Image 1 (cartoon, rainbow, N blue to C red):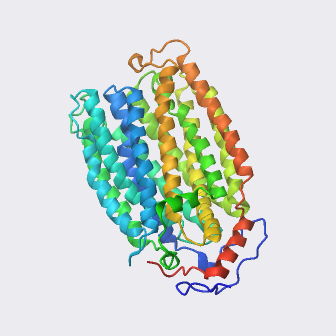
Image 2 (image 1 turned 135 degrees about the vertical axis):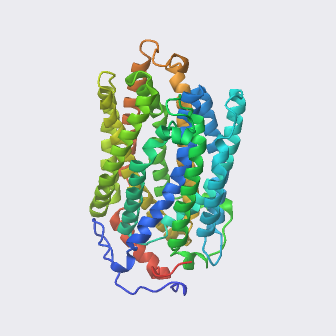
Image 3 (image 1 turned 120 degrees about the vertical axis):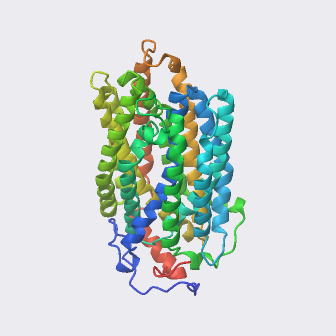
Length: 499
């Protein structure tokens, strides 16, 4: 019988009973301080600031503002994700195998935060009079550089979440706090970025002059870079790496072997299937911006920007309610059951597009947009907590903590498939007959075909996700059993200590 590691405590309280269908109540020793959960959530907003300035504004600045083809836009973003295919797994492996007095995650979070903030403004410093090919090359090169910096921050940051608590429910509670903080960002800042890029305060133009969105995004990038530093450094210094004592005693693992073990984990493969099905929606959901602007709003960009701000604020408000509600459901009935509810509501939202995208009643288009935002937020309350359970399952099988390997593969697949499918959507839009040069005056049937695609594809993919979730093996009862076996092998995790 193996002895518990001397670097972690042996059980000081009785292990929760195994075999119960419902999640067990969180023991006081397993709870995270509220301030730590809330401040950890700020790190997501550091990444959010960078993504808002680059990937989320490409369509508004380059396509709507400069007339770039949707196909070119898709190709540029796909190149970023192909680059991530190399950097994400390597960063996860480096982080897992780091041994320092400051831990495996936080040193990279520190330097990654500073790097991505310092590099962010350079992405938009091209000359708008250049040929579109040169603009695309500049944007792509600097986008790849910034993407590398965000990987240095994001992989360790997301990995840190999986080692903050060993408790099944507290993992959900932590992600609930992350989404609550994210919803505040969604109310106050995110929906208004496009609108801010047209404001004279950021463009530097005279009031009444036609707004230059490129000038606005350049100046706004400096503000967002500053906020990214603030939001990234706070969790770096506040949060603890509670599994570091356990991890620091294990052998360093070759990259190839680590990846092989990761892909042998059945629950992880199921999770990747859920993500793949969700990201496939990007083939058609990327059409939403074109349909809204040119069909529902008749090409009115000012109204579209205002509409995006209002619906984003409302969606963020609903997200503030949905995150605790879904978190409560997951903690009472199990994470997989909460995910089933989210999937069902998402399918209903997609199907409602058939009836609510109507030029006669443009504000009805807000309903599916708001519901989609709320359900995406709820999804990210549950899924990261399930990832932490997967790591425990892997530790029971292989004896090592490999959070970085799982997070790097997950993060890369999430971003790569999402971006590739969104990029291919540019070709799908053109295939369905859409011509950016025609604006609101598209040929008959084009908008109708796009709307049907947006409604039916997510419905079919939601059914596939539903089927996978129904077979999820890491239930609350199973996770109670796994934790009992792990603690019998290596002792409990000391919640008061960390690197």
